[in-house]
Amino acid sequence: MTLYSLCSCKNSTAHFSVILFFLFFLLSASWQEAASMVFLFSKIANFVLFARSDLRLGLIYLIFCLGE
Image (cartoon, rainbow, N blue to C red; front, side, top):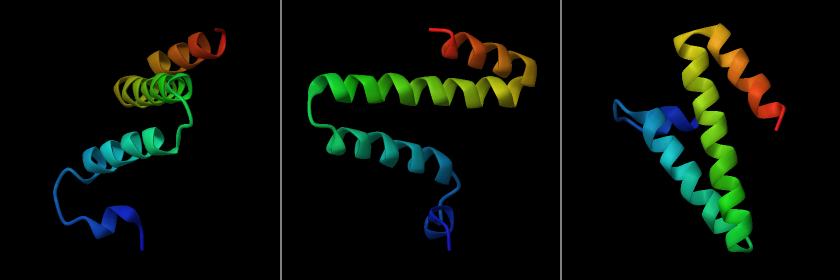
């Protein structure tokens, strides 16, 4: 059983990402760690969106993020 099967709504991935986002805040020890988790989460989400749109754009974005 996955987390997606527990939710009977149509936007289960959106709800799962919001829950995961707030879970990062609960587990963080300081505001710097929370901000770092937000930036990491946004980079991962942007990579997924770019990769779904065009795999080449996703790979370019991934290389750009890893180069920082």
